[in-house]
Amino acid sequence: MSLKVTPTALPGVLVIGPPVYTDQRGYFLETFNFPRYRDIGLDLPFVQDNRSHSSRNVVRGLHYQLNRPQGKLVFAVTGEIFDVAVDIRRGSPTFGRWVGVRLSDQNHKQIYVPPGFAHGFCVLSETADVIYKCTDLYTAGDDYGILWSDETIGIDWPIQDAVLSDKDRQNPPLAQAPPEQLPLYQQPGL
Image (tube, rainbow, N blue to C red; front, side):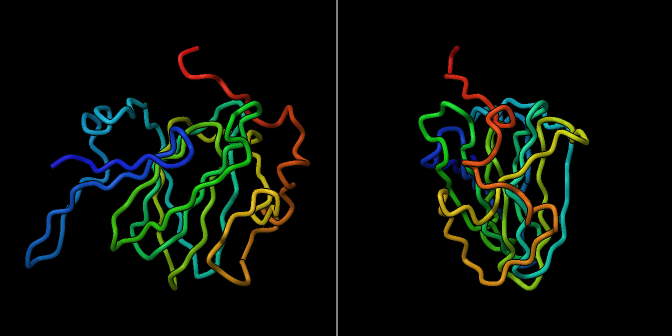
């Protein structure tokens, strides 16, 4: 069986459904298989895996790195999240647009968020464990953020009473982010 790939309204952001094999014991799936992901165009060097554990209504994001941008392959190991990618690349034809998808331990979906996009999620279940594979290493001092509730972006978060870190609460809206702190759009093929 092959990966089911669904393009989104943002070029490069993909929803991926790996094949799931079930029987009376439960299920089995490969969360990553380099040749299969290369075949769908993700010929990327995933160099770091991160895992987060969060409670209901926690919002993490919207985060990005500027000088060492990370592409992220995200999936929920337990629970359910609403995962979001926002195009924040200066000059992009889809600048400021977002897509969101529910990822859970039940639907086994993944989302690939390319470098140059801000990423975040909120937790819909009592708790959720999320893993995201990254295409570059985290670099202290190179982390930036956009306000999760930026009205201009208009993300339709499916929660009330968000639980945020102090750092995420202080992120600026996209329109107030200094331009030199936003990634630059590179036209494909150039």
